[in-house]
Amino acid sequence: MKVAVAYADGIEQLWLRLEVAEGTTAVEAIHQSGVLEMCPGIDLTTQKIGIYGKLVKPDTPLHSGDRVEIYRPITCDPNLVPRRDD
Image (cartoon, rainbow, N blue to C red; front, side, top):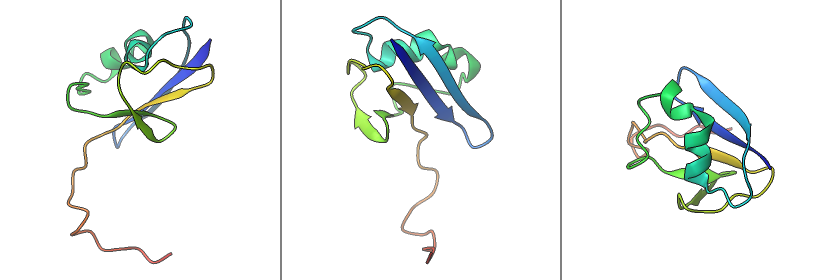
């Protein structure tokens, strides 16, 4: 089945599409995508992952068309950042 792995580090955005077997988990897709080799700063022991913006556990099985996202840690205090009025 076809899935994607997405990661952005503030400078570069990666969107890697790959074919995985049925029953592949989110963390297995991340490893198979090669993103960990391309971005050695990713630490899956501390960074959260999700599917389409919803946090998931690493062992969550994927469905065809899922986009696995690796989230960066927050680097500023959201309480100190001024609000934007759009």
